[in-house]
Length: 207
Image (tube, rainbow, N blue to C red; front, side, top):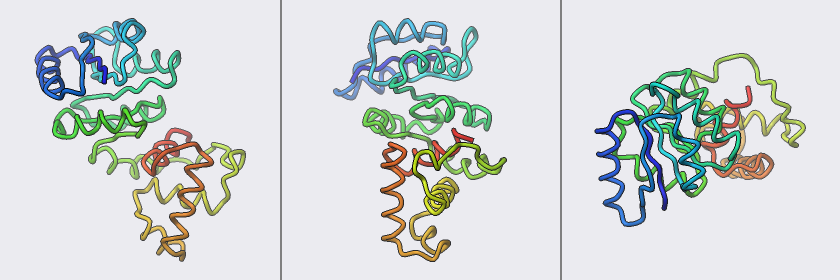
């Protein structure tokens, strides 16, 4: 699996490169210290995953991710940062980043890369726990009906985004767990998503 690392802290880059290259499946094709180099490196190496810091001097990771995703919508970008900032989280979700991880959560970086390469959305435990708080804004304006989403399915989507399990959703809506699982399967199919995390991300990103 081909990777690119971009971080303005050379010690972080060195440490991550060493950790990743200890895994035989990973190859670090290139490194850089600023987002201004991200697009050119992406076009040169076409990595499976781009790991990128957010706060950098010339161009932030969010700006670089937006630039890359505008040109290559299928790019898998993991934003790696020490800052658990609401504004950053919302921006990352709306951009369509593959994930947003805290550097402190280092033990989950390798599993996150593997999951992102499989097309999953990857957000650290602390980040996922913050999504319900971020959801407490105005009602969504996205036209779910145009995607064939019924009112009941939209209720399920909202509750998934609040972090409820299938059992909790079933209890809240007076349904069986099997019915909730069926709703989730239908929702994933209609929205072309892969898992319940992507449902929460989609909901937040389309407000």
